[in-house]
Figure 1: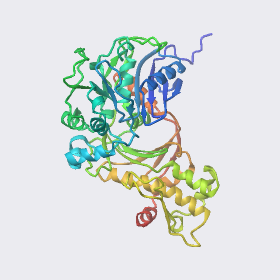
Figure 2: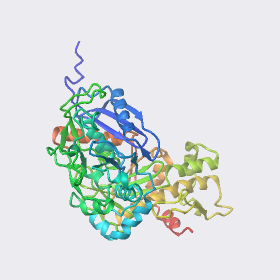
Figure 3: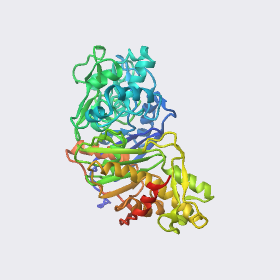
Figure 4: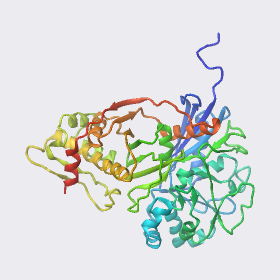
Length: 498
């Protein structure tokens, strides 16, 4: 008998997260956002990686997710900033330099000195640091001039995978060959290059040329002159909801089909914002190995100090972002010191009063990026016989981590970006002490969504948007809602600590 509770036809879309560590593929119901099936595969380790490893992982993850033969649209989101340099035959010139490869720190300083931090911020919304693509291009120009001279196109990791997915690729591999003018990207990932303006929506070709010493142009589909060395090809930027198609399917990408709609993709934080359904007034605090604070803004953001990166989002707005180095591992250090697990750390912290009786941890265990204190170390102050208890120490660990993230949120709101609530995500978000103390330290309502692959889910949102012409409004499951409970003395003590 036919089960009347099951839809007669379900339209499926797929979202991909090609992160630093792995590739995740979600196949979801385009109407509801419900996950139908999923797959994943690991990525190679390292801060420089052969992109072929990403392609192999995408093939394996798609296969594990049951293929794409019943999928109507797909989008790829993932790690930002990585440099994929291609020659005229579509082959990678060298292993991709990832966002976390810091060899270009000196090149970043050189670019800022040549242009000026305020001018960079005005033109691109960011001030270059080692993670950004432009600095890696300058490093190649200075340290690998022979390889830099071979570059015919520059792509970001998700751009290159989108290109391969559509049937293009190195000579002799992709069935459609090395057509560099078929490279596409989106504004969120392009805004992390330091040669694209989130305000104008266009590349700053003069800044690109300053970085590499050679001119560039934007890809023009239909030109098909992949060997033209007169100017380096940069991916065409697709608008939110815009798509291209898979013009052929490579044989190893089993159970796929030509004609599949392919959206422009997104940087990982922008994709996560889409997956969370974040809108203007929402801020996202992600507590992972490092910490990230970003907010959806209806207007562009400029910060010449470089504290806030004025990225674009994937929905036509802006995504000012602050990154910190010290996040979940601060909790690991506290639990290890006290000889407890994370549940016991939470119980101890909640047994102490806000402010931990004056005990303050500045958690710069690995230096810090925001504020820019690369050589700093962690400090514990306010220790008296009365304040130095296990409970207060546990509380100080969590408060210190959250105060660092709160400083990042303050930097964003100081630029006129509202934060009416915080969506708290990441490995530590479900810790009850973290969410409760976050409501006190951040002073705004806290929403803790259920754990999910929000980058891949955001890519699926983008795929559904491309398919239907409308951004979907999928419900997200919530683990906890915590009312704002501001305790300003906690932040004051943290600010005053030595």
